[in-house]
Image 1 (cartoon, rainbow, N blue to C red):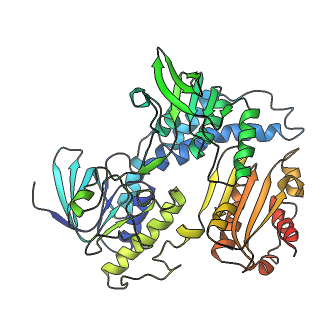
Image 2: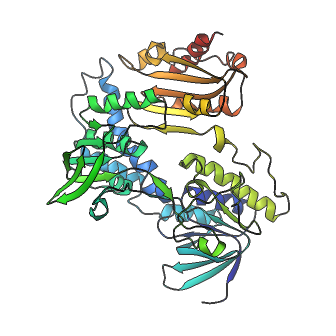
Image 3: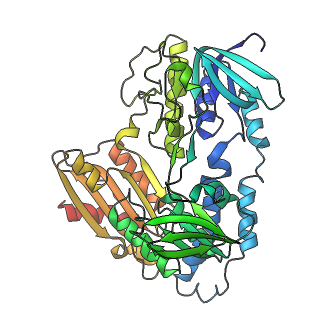
Length: 473
């Protein structure tokens, strides 16, 4: 291998997180090389956020029209699956990253295609797509933004079955006749509904649905899936998997569940297996523990950084981009002598919100949107909790939004401070409501002051007035 090429910063992984780290570093005037082994734009752009939501959206629009008298009489057909799949593909640019590469070039970011490994202090070896290896040496920092990979449970025979991961399920070109989904988290719930509405017979097998959300959220989504014909098996024990001709089979509580496709959506873990961490005394396959500026702990010299999924902190695209901005700014500030080892909470260099103010949306129908702590999480944190619930269907804006609107909102309050520490909304089109709650949680807005944030009438946001009234204001 030739002598190393020296650059200011090396970013490994060109997904949304790596792109944002690189962009912030480049904006500060530092040279940056962004290394990517697959597509620039990463998981979210091509196999997760964008294609999955595109698969869901057409069904949501159709269902929304069918909930409003006068519109439902005009909407009598079903989804055109081919058109939905083609629209999905348009959002991935047919899995072509040319536009993302052009963006990087315009931002002053060098894209190097290849598989990267850390070989020593500030050094990264890249097995390039062109066949010639290249060794990079960073003057200031290396940032690992390699994301996460799917995991599978230890079920007898599963490792010998060619099952779908989320990538296969979001990029499929045909609608499976029968789909078995193992896992009831965000991926399992969303894709069960998407493929059911596109015409698949779907069986969802899991211990529970959306178990990290408030319990009522999983219950309402389960009810909706079942009403649309998804067979949801909860508290179910899967003991074996195998392939029988063209069928994929799960043995669930002694019953054979068969499908043309099997989607395993049981979680993900940090993608650090082949990153070269052993050269630094770190364990491959494990999360990279960081401080709030993204600096990896346990590495001498403070030159290694990481953000989002690879750290195990708040593995969500929007939260990853937030952490990436803090990480990129911290790298640049330290390189230019403007920042020391310590960073102040809530500053430009700290991803403080990762700890207590993470928003998330599950784009099922009904949608689930929440931020901060659930009731259980707040109690486990020793907070003096008061919970306030309200039926969204009793809000004028919701009743106009859909006939027979059914949904629920919850406010989790730290009673000792009279401040919001969490909120959850379940119902059609609640995703756009969660940011108001995020602002309240991040800003630690006192409830007596939040009372003066008057919601427009008649909108679903009037639920804030009703929640605060239920609280006693």
